[in-house]
Length: 147
Image (tube, rainbow, N blue to C red):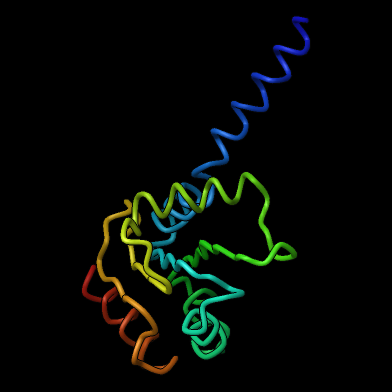
C-alpha cells in the first residue's frame, strides 16, 4: 500500500512540475540569452487563420532566424480538436494553464510577446496583418527597444 501511495504521489508531483515547464524553461533561456518569448495559441487542425499563421509566418525562414539568432524562444500552445491530433494529458494541462494566464478570452490565433519574466510586451489577436519579414522585424524592433 505504501508503494502505491508513493507512486501516485510521485506522478501527481511530476505532473505539477511539468505544468509550467515550457514557460519556465523559456523564461530561464530568455533570461540567460537576453531573448524574448513568443507564445502562440493555436487550433492546428480546425482554425484556418492559425494554420495560415503557422504556414506563412512561423514556418518561414525569416521567423526561424529569430530563434537561431537568439531573438525569441517560441512556445506553441496548441488546442487541436481531431482525435488523431490530441496531445498528451500533461501538454493539454500545460496549454490550459498558459491559456488561463495569457489568453483568458480564448482567442485563436492569439500571439503574445513576453519578456524573460513573463510580462506581456505586445499581443496580436487573430492572424497578424504583417508578412513574415515585417512580423519578424517588429519583434526585432521591440527587442531592440528593451535594451
